[in-house]
Image 1 (cartoon, rainbow, N blue to C red):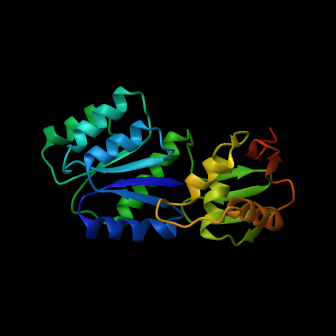
Image 2 (image 1 turned 90 degrees about the vertical axis):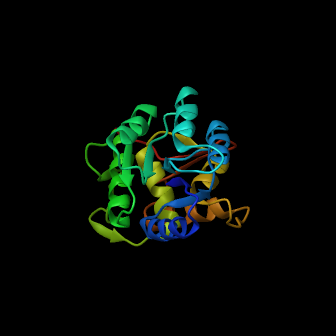
Length: 221
């Protein structure tokens, strides 16, 4: 899953990115409110946003208001050093889905992010199941017909996207944006290679190719 992190403290941002990478997230980082507002209003495909409130150029609350005013309902987890009750209420009223007060433990951040993503996908429980595959986003363990399957980080990201949206068609460009961050070099056939590996580890038709359109994981129900 692709996360936008908006945080002007470079040390904290590096720590958060380091903590989220093993969880299977692709994290893009911005350090000011104006850039965050522009990126989100352009409709970049993020699964969630981690947003600091005390940002240069434009306050995080103003970013929240602008994004929600345009109808963008991406889940937003606010980070704030503003621990006064009225400040927290202002963030929630502006459109935040959850908040975390600085300083915080990264394990709590990752747990809150997982819960936020589950709610946004309408999942009462974290376990994903489709076509005999079971995926636990908390432990990142995957099994097929009862046998554990080992996947790379990007294979995990792709599989989670497909299993979270069975029946949805993804274009190659969309999958590339979900799997790779802005600062990563991407080979032209990277997505095809990852999907080939998933088919080899499960079965040939786990993900169908719609020629000229994209890819889909069918919902057997």
